[in-house]
Amino acid sequence: MPKIILDIYHSYLKMIENSIGARLFQNLYINDGTRSDAVRGGRLSCAFFVSSILNNFGLLKEPHARVESTLKDMQKFGWFEIKKLRKGAVLLWEAQKGQFGIHKHLGFYLAKNMAISNSSKKRVPVRHHWTFGKKSNKSYRRIIGIYWHKKLDI
Image (cartoon, rainbow, N blue to C red; front, side, top):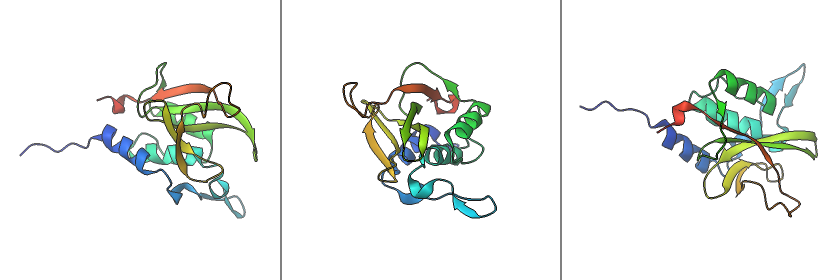
């Protein structure tokens, strides 16, 4: 009988794609003397979304509420920067001012100029253009990091 091996890459991609619209990442409670929702009902869930998917496949130690802690953990777990977009790569967008201050943003690259990341307005992961629009468009957002892990190589 042949040995059965988990196909991490394709399972990982399907989990990312299947997360569109999922409310699973809307709340992450922390105890800081009072119980509080670190991701504010899904408005600040990009890091929680990305880190949860990575954690599920053993590509990160634990889920995180913040971009900086997610990136730090990714580095410890062997993630590295690459120059070209690859399907399944983690994307880091530049910081922009939003309702809760200035924040960087994390998501995943799909293919054909599309990405998935958490929408602070819809409060769920959504599919969108990888730059959120064209340079002449107000919603354009520059990517400042593309990350990959060797376990995703097929």
